[in-house]
Image (cartoon, rainbow, N blue to C red; front, side, top):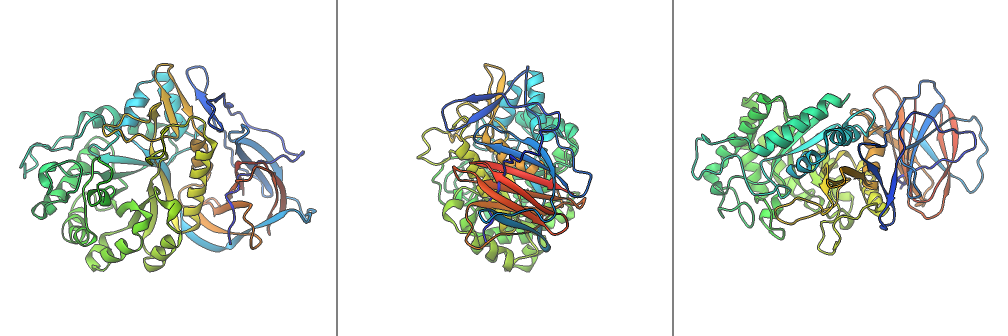
Length: 514
């Protein structure tokens, strides 16, 4: 049964706008929606106060017509009148699914360059928008291990040919100027643990069959252990600089090194060679190191590789023992059925599935990489997050925290859109609808929340939603109305009764109660 991502925009007369949040200053660029402008004078915030009395609730709404996390409150009603034209959605605590790890974005070189191009005050506003209690409270930060396409040049941590002792291994200027200090600032302003996940795009060219940063190329077998040592060395250096990693992946998008359609940093793996590397090199090296609590996430590539790639790797008992989770990217989700997620979970229920990268504007037919204010792009994020969560995914990570108005910098000219776009000339940044789409989850669904069932009438495709039981016993329900017209909904909880809601056109909402 499909319950829509219910972006509930509530308009009941008994509700009142509450809280001390700063409101959005809108700007329309003619792309079917608006951005919220942030500068030294102003930046919108999200005021969240958890409901403290049973039977009362808070509702946060974002909509194409202009709401951005607008907060209203109210009470459940016993024996409320429910008209025939209302859709009833029932919160069912008895059906329990996956536990949530969290939501976040990536500390790329490009993100650091753009954030630090702003004045100190505006930098702080941008980071607080993501990580502080007045923002959407990200709890995950993905960190490229070395360079990626969203760097200004190609590099690894040891580009000295034949350095089999890794004696020339060094973190880069980008680590010391962008990644390490911004991660520290994010941690200082967050009330959540920020889980860091490292992903390598490529080994040094001299370790590869094609002696290149990109293109058709694989890790040479004689360097399997050295590449594992390189990863451990990265973790060591970051720990020395104050940052311990919650997880690492086996490498970003190995298919790009097999089918090099995109000419950017990549390294190919076959699933059998990756299985051997995990079981004989990376896994044992991690266990023997000071990072033996760090989670190992395999694949880090597209959904269409599921469950085939995972099944092959898991055939080796040693590899299976070292692997904690499976990373998936969103880029072809629109043409790959969700049953691949279900099949992967059913075959390997002890391994979590985490969405590790998402962005819009990557396709060749996306002639405008950045579309400021596009509500449709926000809805694409909304629908994908919702779909993933409904099919066993435990969290969702956006790509660059911030890009410029072109969608870069990017040495390979592989420009894309971002939830936050920086205009350094004006010393301001723009929060896209995508930012609020993610925020309707990251702000309210805390780490350790467990998905529970929502039940709706068969055949209802008007609204879509997902519900969670939070560690404090509260409930969070996120919903989306994709229609150009409002939809009347009744949410029922057998403990408290009913809420009648009119969901506005093209809106997202999060309902929270205890």
